[in-house]
Image 1: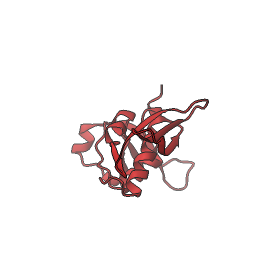
Image 2 (image 1 turned 135 degrees about the horizontal axis):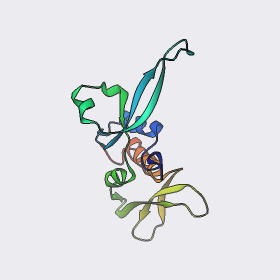
Image 3 (image 1 turned 60 degrees about the vertical axis):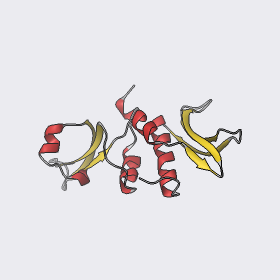
Image 4 (image 1 turned 90 degrees about the vertical axis):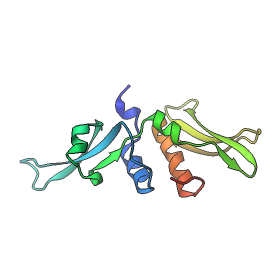
Length: 141
């Protein structure tokens, strides 16, 4: 499986950073500016990289680096919740009959799922749930 399927997409990674999620991950998206003879201006390219301690010491600009959280890292960030005295858990899985993934908030007391987010990868489904929880102030960073 490609590494890109195991980490959050660039778009969601940027959104999590905007929401104030601490940028601690083994992988990251790094913005690089390329100049080519064919192009009249430089254009940015984002690449997926493993943590490089030399780059950290050399002080890469943090605006050009966004944490690319893995499925496991996102799983650790997703909390157990309490809604109206109902204990809830967040779970993710491959959605039946599709190539996509779902991440649900499920009531332990038989109330079914309370909210669902979908993604093309499990990392994106989990990241969308984290964004939902943060944007709706159900959790804080």
